[in-house]
Length: 95
Image (cartoon, rainbow, N blue to C red; front, side, top):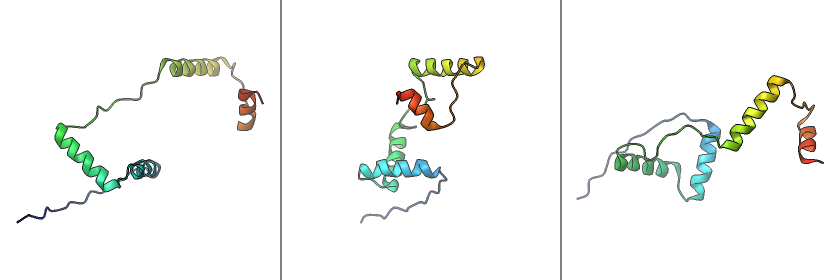
């Protein structure tokens, strides 16, 4: 005779946007949130830890150079100023 396993409930507070984006990805995979969490927990058990290595975001050299350039422009007062986003895009795109 098969024994019915007890179910547990988990409540988590999460940013609404993060949840919506994750649910959309999971739906594209044909998976609901509950199934995804079950898969995640089973992987935690299988790996005896997180099934991925948590890391801080790492910027590539091009992005780091752009950030440095932007910071220097702000400090030197050499950056352009725009009155609207439309003006910025016109200048950037050459329209």
